[in-house]
Image 1 (cartoon, rainbow, N blue to C red):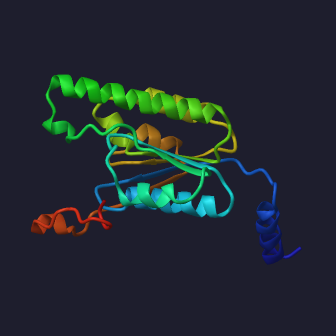
Image 2 (image 1 turned 180 degrees about the horizontal axis):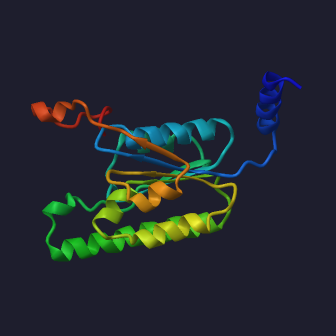
Image 3 (image 1 turned 120 degrees about the vertical axis):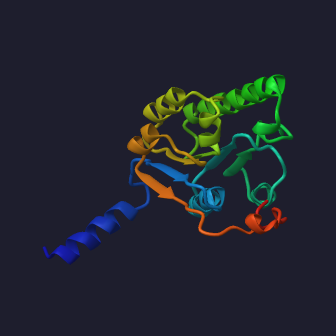
Length: 195
């Protein structure tokens, strides 16, 4: 069998309906815009192929364009934005930080519980890196979630400053780099573009 025929056979074999393919781990990190957008795009692609997608957001909770769009799909793509904390963490006092940490832990526990149901094909942990960086979610807990994930589950994680330990266990890592951003010119986030 020629090399080309072998490649075609391999690709067609793994595209067959019902063929089990192991779920992988993705990271979208870096200081550039588009990490959540990339994760949502992957989720839409999976949903379009009949997969069930759960997106759990950390340190968000406010209305956004992706929440509105995905709410119009069906129960095969769900976003849990959590509860709004209303401020950036650097604006919070100690009591507000404690409350925010409790909310992030609830989000993580929800993601873990849902993962164990084995009903999802894709689990997106949006801004999990931020929750790890500010020590609201322990890195070891995220590593353990990856270690005990169901074989079929695809995990997507977003946020700046992905720890080396997560980069080591991931199968895909995209570093989205800021080259230019209108915020530096004083242009605030625009409805439907940045939020």
